[in-house]
Length: 67
Image (tube, rainbow, N blue to C red; front, side):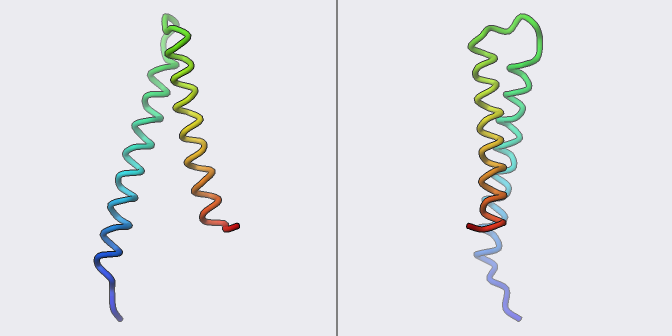
């Protein structure tokens, strides 16, 4: 059995970066919607963060399930 370590490292690296990135974007969304004194722009940015997270999840499901 042969393991392609380069491909394994690439998958690990992309998974790590995307996971940290999506958690960061979702956290920005939570911060933008927390508190009652937030401006309209902060709420709009927070909803954009949530939309980006939803799009990433939908793309992942689309990729796994297939066309």
